[in-house]
Every structure is written in structure tokens, then in C-alpha cells.
Image 1 (cartoon, rainbow, N blue to C red):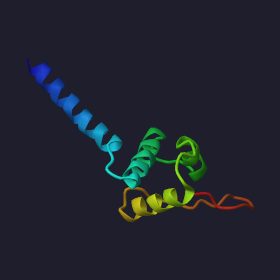
Image 2 (cartoon, helix red, strand yellow):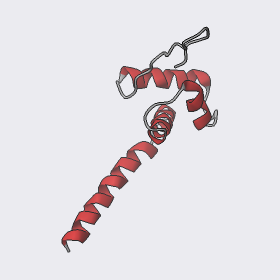
Image 3 (cartoon, rainbow, N blue to C red):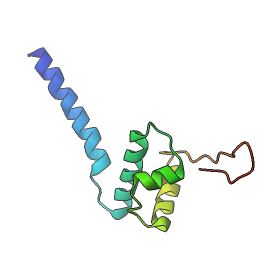
Length: 92
């Protein structure tokens, strides 16, 4: 009985965590949740181009940029610019 109770609590916690990443009230929340899911699936770090690929180019570029800025302002994500060792553009 103790094992079943602990298992039920564990399942409830996972359900609540999963629901937080999938349930959205607005389009902006939907995009933000998709970004957070993609980052979580990738281990917490990814390049901007890889994020676009993971999202399947499903969202408008301007809307996605606004959501990324909002997530950064809320300190849910950190955006870093990494300069390559040689010539070239820095990547985010």
C-alpha cells in the first residue's frame, strides 16, 4: 500500500509537470511551451537554427523572436552569442 501511494503521488507530479508544458491559454504561451519543450528535450542548450528545426518552422519568425525575448526577460532561458574561433558570424 505504501508503494502504491508513493507511485500515485509520483504519477501526479509528472502529470502536473507535463501539463504545464502542453496546456496554453494563448498563442504566445503555445510558442513558449514549444520552445521550452524543445530545449528540455535537447538537454537545455541548443543553437538557434537547431531550435528552428526542432520546432519545424511552425511559428512566424517575428513571433518566435518576441517569445524568446520574453522568456529571456523572465529568466526562463539565457541567450548566449558564441563567436567562432575563426572568421564568421556569432551563433546564438
